Length: 233
Image (cartoon, rainbow, N blue to C red):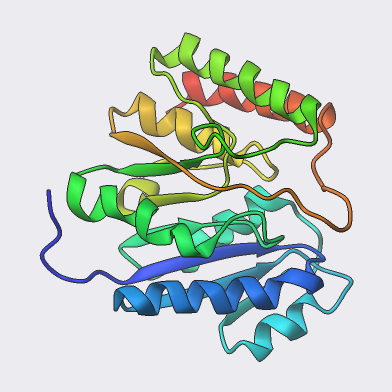
């Protein structure tokens, strides 16, 4: 169903020690949404960073929620979901790997196509290059597992670049604290019969620092979350 009015869009950006990129990401998000002429809010959830990420975020004049203890990406996102006022929720990473300029492509299926969850797929864009083959293999495995449990095929079940209707999100009872949040969300959306669509995105792996994701430790959590989400409400 096509939306007749311009809904409020809430962009949630979880941050943990991303001082070199967070300011640029926020600025680009603002420019992208303002170009579409939508009302919006940006919520930065700082997961107890030890660098200048909170100060940079506040300098961009957005809502900043600073956790007093490092809790994990899933916890940060769930806080953002609770605080967001928008009818449509956007999530993207703060390390610059997701392009805010592609937001219109992710928003369109929800605004005009009756879709409930849009996932930006790194695997639908042929020009993307993955430097970490272990992470890439892990995504293939989880894609297969999601399909086995739900009967629905996805190409990038672990992508953090997403757009979802807030009304749907509020019904999911998400519980994850870490990177497994994406899997839990996807499984519960599919389980409840909501419509999911993937769109291709450009993906640029971080060129500085080190990824916070542990392929083995977080991989086990993701695997467990998929099972738990399938059998829970």
